[in-house]
Length: 294
Image 1 (cartoon, helix red, strand yellow):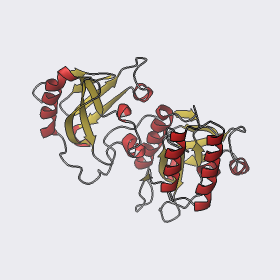
Image 2: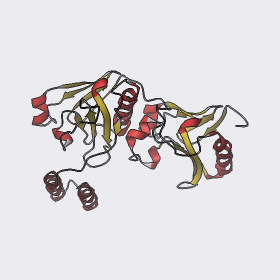
Image 3: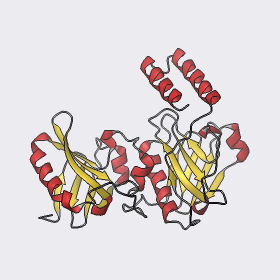
Image 4: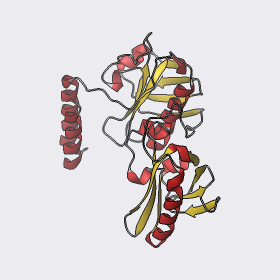
């Protein structure tokens, strides 16, 4: 870029354009999304970026967007497209009158980035959130010290299957991947995937509430700004950890469920709807979402 060290300040964040990266510093104001506050700051190497664009925003704003390469950032990989636009850490929102300035920086960046999605890199190019980390889910407390993930069950939320299995502890070296379903969706959860002796992901129970390798989210439990950096931290440690030569880290691919389980969920959703705890729109949207998982 023609002037290294330039800083472009927008709503909730400031981007510093360095010779080899974009250094993003998030604000800590009350209106800043909690995910941004939890992340604090991030350095995005140019080689982790596939494309740069400028698009119109809402209510007199414009957005400068970076598109990360698939497999370059553990946070975005485990999020798997589930983040709201307003929570995208690769999106800098500016007043519309600064569109020309945003376009200038986009033009300066384009010759420096990877330029195509291409193949996933063999390592993460953006640093994962650092351990130790912990958060409270609906049915237990999750903790990660950098080497071991542990789940301690709450008697008020954990299923009988989890109580029977007891509190859980998992070494990173025994895991194959992480699956995160946003708490802002119906039946959110964080699930750890295990390797079998061949290094492939091992099968697991269909329902996260019955799986001792999972914690489930609920209203006020497992919030995005707590559970997503946690999942990304585990994923980052997984990829950095030596494992079987043919083992691959698996993320975000939720399996199709048993139709009987879906039927039970829909019946429970109907009971909540009749009790007035779920609106007509929420009932229709969540029922459609459940049916799509068959």
